Structures are given as C-alpha cells and as structure tokens.
Amino acid sequence: MTPKRKNTKTTGNKGEQIAVNYLKQQGHLILSRNYRYEKAEIDIVSRIGGEIVFTEVKTRSNYSIDSIRDLLSTAQQKRIIEAAHNYITTHNVNKEARFDLIIIALDNSNKIEHIEGAFYPTL
Image 1 (cartoon, helix red, strand yellow):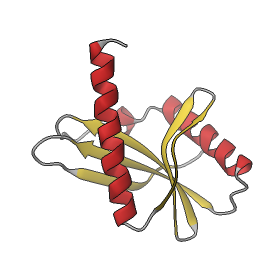
Image 2 (cartoon, helix red, strand yellow):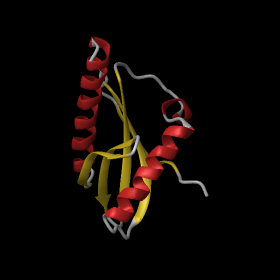
Image 3 (cartoon, helix red, strand yellow):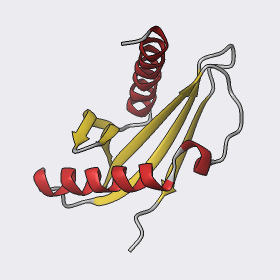
Image 4 (cartoon, helix red, strand yellow):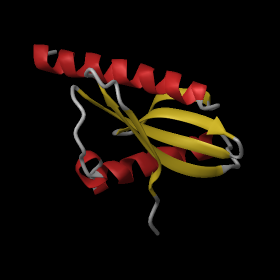
C-alpha cells in the first residue's frame, strides 16, 4: 500500500468511526460496517425505527460544500443500491430502505453533515 493510499484509508476509517458514533447517538442500531458485495461496499448498515439505512461516509480533511453528485457518482450509487439489495435479500430484511450520506470534516470545525435520503433507487 502506498503512503498516500494508507493515509486515505486511515482518514476514511477515522471518519467512519465518527459516523458510527454519531448514528448511535441519533438512535441507530448498527447492523454492519463495510458490508461488501462484489465490487461494492456499504460503509454502515443500521436500523432506526421501521427503516434500514445504508450510509455512505465521505471524510474530508477540511469542510467545503460539494454537490452530492460530486461526492457520489451515479455508478457508485448503483453499486451501493445493488449491495443493499443483496443485504436485504440475504438477511431477509422486511423494512423500508433509505440511502444516507454523511460528510465528515476532519479540521477545526469537526463538522458532520447528515443527508437523509441522499439518493433513491431508480427503476
């Protein structure tokens, strides 16, 4: 692993742990982390109320406003949706599904932006 790749992975892991702690504080039950299906990975799978939530975490060294499209390409969304479908079928989940995005800033602001329903599966 190259030093840059290692640093990116370390930053990502730190952001994911912050997101997990945040979601727990919001009342989520964490079901899985880094769920993999084929080439896709879902950072966090959780349950709150009658919903199962598939959360993608984006960690940045500083906070800037990016559009969701810049953070999550259509191809990434499709992979996440396919992995979510696999999770739902293999775990016999009978709940409404939601796809969230959490943006973490690892700077002095330590900003957490949680976008519920950041994207939806298309037909």
